[in-house]
Image (cartoon, rainbow, N blue to C red; front, side, top):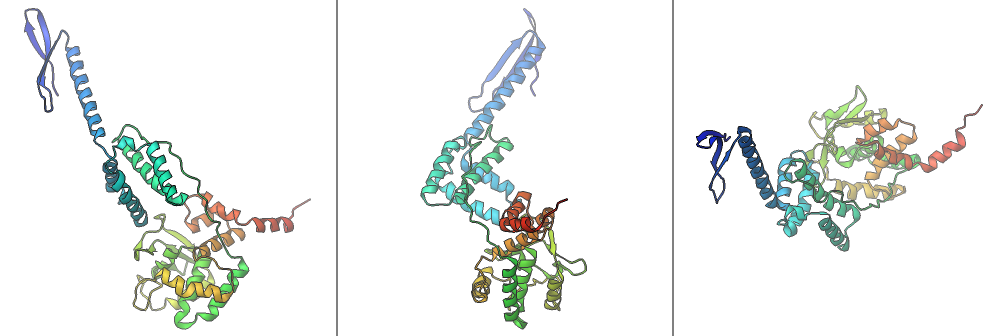
Length: 359
């Protein structure tokens, strides 16, 4: 750090500041002051302004591409494989058209035009929100890391998403479907029935079902550990959706079926495998077994994921504490679990007719 130098002149004692400025047009800068404190203040203020000017120059050189690449570099280790793949897919398309755009031009007006363009292409509200949210997340990250002085797209709103209602079976439909599957899938095909049984008794996701290992079954304490999933698209094992390990119930019917089924398997083996010892393809399972079983059993047609909705809804209907259901489901927010209460409108009305307390 530069310091003022005390010099003697005919006019008296002075404090001199002398140094060469930085940059391409460097020149010698010299100032003299009557007081030392004034000289020190000059040095401090000069370099403070120089630092601010350099920061402004750096910011003007930032582009959407530079900030997107910075975000990916820092955050990629923290994101799930699915989230990272989705973000990269969106950014690949955005950067082709807007990568060179100065960062402060990626503002609310830019996002409004992008949203309008995507809607005209026929993209759903949820898809459009993912695109615009990817941009705002990057801008927020740059702002929090002091790369930009403000977020030029702060406050940009999301489109209202219209989600299709969740479907689920009533208890009688579950019993009818499982009865059909129990009679049909025996011996070498027993694993198909067991897959249905686990899905409907635990509410786990398809990826979590196909990612189960023998070591996850705790027969002594009556629970199954859910700590990984099979990414259906990539066919690789990864952490669960929320990256959290949770437990789901292992009832007596499941316990007896699994004890027999996993006998002789190693702890690290996947419970469900093909004859070639490879993970189950969910698309193949759905097309080859699930959809035909739906049709032939005569029950109402639902998606495989709706087996999860069915399990969680019936748990709520049975009066299981919502916080327990939230834990079983792996929901980060209790509001997500509350959706299953809303599905039970008819059941709640029935309770009103039969459950009466009075003096």
